[in-house]
Image (cartoon, rainbow, N blue to C red; front, side, top):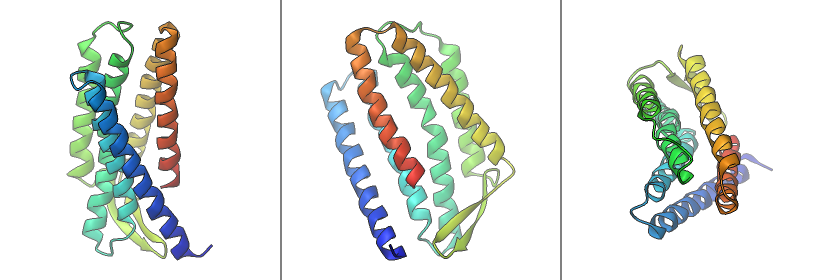
Length: 193
């Protein structure tokens, strides 16, 4: 397979992911416009689409400034994604979680502080390097901290999801399995792009 065919396949897959994500976001929101889970899901979907699209589009800009902004936007949306994702998981299971505001404050602080360090500094992305297949972000001194933080947040939220899943009813477990299937599709898309 030549490079142009590969790029075309990637473009088609990104468009399909975007359309499916937008459709699913509207579908979930329309099911209950007042429910917090139904309002957070489209926000999470938007951040995922922003994450994938900015990483994908970063490859095609020959101007380093634009490519750096897109790379930072991708990393920033990945980190900010954890704010609504955490609140979503807390509210996804009916009544299994006591309302602990301190953990939401910590997650919000991490998300918004990292937003500043990722987007408005060279802490995570210093520059991009033009290669034959596209642009490659040159990571800053904060890349280890960023990926470690992503790993810890993933573990914390995954643990919370697992604990709540064990306490949930059969109907909630089925709902959770559908959610996890959608999350798996996102993770596969993230690995590819």
